Image (tube, rainbow, N blue to C red; front, side, top):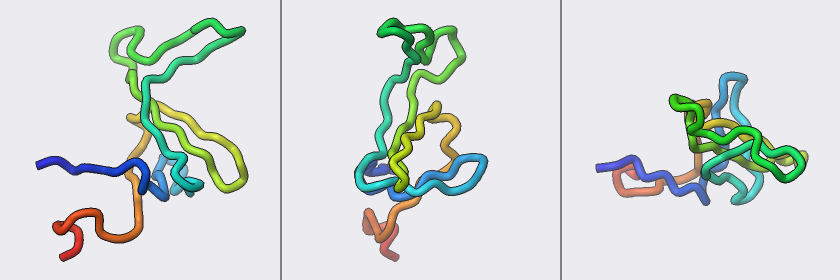
Length: 87
């Protein structure tokens, strides 16, 4: 059994500084990299032991947050997603 989390339903993300509100269906997970002038200057997974997956979302004020997925402590969504949660 897995803890399937539908990224389209994520409404809040918990980081070390508290809960962050996700605007619409903007929450996403993907490989991340930092670029400068169109060139990669750092990519997750290199050097080894750095997370290769990042999380990103837009907040209600229009700002966009991005972080390594290891910084996400929890996610929250409304309503039951599976029968197990409906009990």
